[in-house]
Image: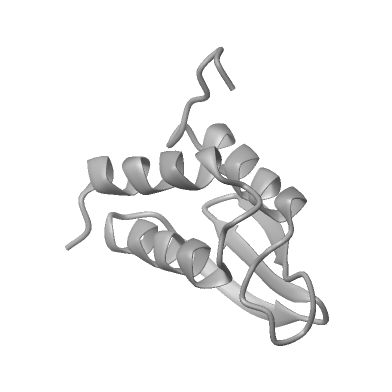
Length: 94
């Protein structure tokens, strides 16, 4: 079972490198959130994946088809959803 502290640490790692995040990393975190009690859904859309965690919906897009890295604004959307859910907090340093 996933531990909330570990999930938070993984989110912090992604926040530190928004231009070098793989889609599989976000998918893994969302999956782990489902294991700790959050309602999670995902579905493929034309240019990425649409995720829903509880009431927060966000889309993560890849750079190009076949590339596993996601665009920085997709990481930002993910982080904003985590902040709105109270899972992640930004520091004043970032």
